[in-house]
Image 1 (cartoon, rainbow, N blue to C red):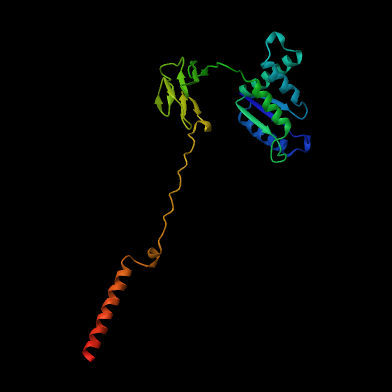
Image 2 (spheres, helix red, strand yellow):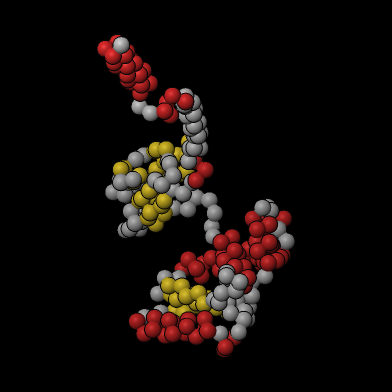
Length: 236
């Protein structure tokens, strides 16, 4: 079992993050006394931006045309990636600088990421088995296909065994103990806007009151007129 410890504070013995990492490491070693500890002090041995640029450019240069600087940078990137990959536990001790990690730690992460093997990499499965899956575009869809997968470890898409299927944002892929989540905002359909309904024009009589009010006024006036006519006729 291996513990990888990364220190990035420039304060040395006055660093609070180093003191906290010392406590964590001490308790971890009490539970794993035979473990190996690999340490990287990025303040004492910083990763430079030139190393990252050299490793990236080396990956885009034919091997027989790489410079000595590119070869050294690519070798360091592979070493960092191997340390990270081989560690069961990682302790990262860093302070907060302007609401983010410092440049030393970011340079280490960037270079270690460059050192990760690219291309076809088999997934390790229980009982020394392995499997491969392929992601590709076809007919405007992002699709997944099971490559060489053991029958007892089929490729699962949202809990259903598949050989090949189209992927959508939020889908979950699984094979044995490996789990993957499809995070692809660009595949979401564009929202379709709905035009507002045309405003209804209200007439003055609509605001006057309930329908039929005008007719009741006319009928009331007619009755009053008839009553007055009867009174006048009887009196005179």
